[in-house]
Image (tube, rainbow, N blue to C red; front, side, top):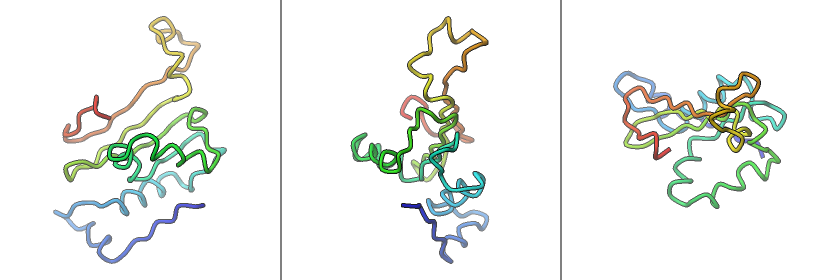
Length: 133
């Protein structure tokens, strides 16, 4: 199943100054900058804006099938983008080299021959706690 994004007139009105972005606009932007929909062979995976809120409210089991049904192994990706919305504020979590998470040790971290795994957390207002994400 392909994830289609529908933009309505009230979504477009949210682009005006002083308005808040909504999930439809964030999902559209994430798909647009990626240049293509999620592809199982791509090195990049972009979760929808509903991923994190579903994970928080319903737990890991509720989102475990989101990639499995599409036969996407997120641990083979180079980058995973996770938009986060809380308290009317958007931020972005980027998981870099998720397949290397279990392999990271202090010695390997400083080795130039191993691609390390890490999180980039982009929050322009510092409103979201990184340790919660």
